[in-house]
Length: 415
Image (tube, rainbow, N blue to C red; front, side):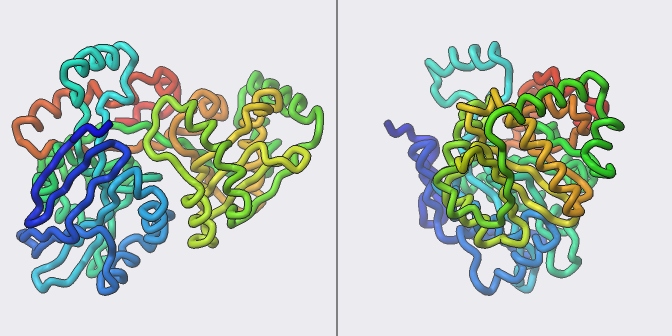
């Protein structure tokens, strides 16, 4: 059944989103004047703007290729767009990716909040489900594009602060959200507060330094006696039965159809969901980013029972997505085995830091990993609604309801 969400005129074109499954159809180009020059919204990067796009993300783990992959593979889930920031001469100085989404604001809140909202939605079906702009990446953490003149992000941040409210109103978005930006961006994103934005925590990533001689040194120096004993018991139990074979590849295309159901099994169990990977994403990642993509595969008697999709860059292994065969995962303690083998492989291959994507915090707490805060920077396009939103956001932000997060030694860094 189709349920109209928003319909907004953009120049002589119309932006329409009819269902949450079908992304909106955007005009080929929206242009607006600004104090620094102009901005343009496009759905694909023209050849003359490609150098600025590549330059802007060259130093990040998720470079321009990753945004092209997510647009191609996940384009039916979200509308992937680009904001071209141009100077007074008309030259494109920065290209910032963003999304148009229809987001449920209470997704990360406790059951009693969701029940109250569900009651309201019987009368107002779209209550707290709002069309919004999300600045960042549909499958990962966000980054700000460096501009081609300074090579830094300050000019881009100032340009986004001015341009985004205009762009949001033109596209019919109720809200603008900088999605999942690492703590290192705070000094610059806090400048957005003067533009009416509010910063709140998102669900954090986790990580740890890999400054150990080997995995045994990690166990004995980092973990508690009880956790060491628990892990060793799990590893002994896992070693019973047919052996678990481990392999690392850069291109998982030959196995993509086999591993996707394992990912989907984990995805369906997740309390919070946003993007959902598919075969195209897995295959394109290995083909277009072979220098950075690593797929870790575990087999029992030739059958794949687990895999992990990782990105490696600048001495860091980023453990992003996992898939498990739950017909054997619990009996063979596959989550703990895959984590152990990933950390060992990272250390043996010279990676200095292990980074894990958000959620599943209880085992990571016992692994003695640290939180890596991720932030949301939010404002409404309507000034009156923004006044209300700034007061409501601390109630809606998801970290306050996760009791495990409060047990991490650096939980105070979330804000």
